[in-house]
Image (tube, rainbow, N blue to C red):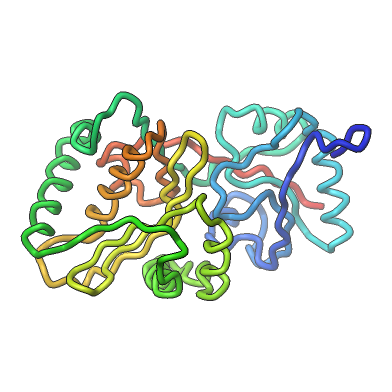
Length: 277
């Protein structure tokens, strides 16, 4: 939306042929999931909001008009934080708001190092992080942090896709497109790797903004030689890098509820607000 030629509100949107790739909408809305839909951002964005001034009603009408023009059956917002001004505005505009998932965050303020973070986890979480860290060290596992320009992003995309295939979402990581996208982010992203010898057994693409460190995408190979799990090692290295950079918040993404709650992350509810065109 523009006011006298100046952009005052912005909303990225995606037209999806197959509105429900994660299977989170069809049990909450009367759709099969195969419909064409115009939605806010993309499914990978777990923080839907409207940058700029509050012009929700105007943006919603523009979105509905575009959805009709493009032949979409549904339009609206996914991953809207529960209790946010955007959710309130959408409900006031006539949208239902239905909980679909939780995203997870950790407050890192006041922590001097990763040991401080581990101390905030639950008893089982603390034991798990320490035990896996000790076993990985005994196996000779190493962790490293690198700029995306110096990383093999195709190898990492493959590992992410194999991991996501366990949940039916491996197609989220087309190798060349993924590598190209991450490369374009440049200094806004970094790569954290876990290696057993020379073999990559864990990798995360992490994103940065002014205050937050985002554990955005990861892949893990569980067929390791030692008696440890690469995922807790990768997670600990991610927290350590967030603290090293002085970020106040770790964004842990969605899903994997049991691990994240046990290991010190706090759930924040996300809603979907959709209407038929």
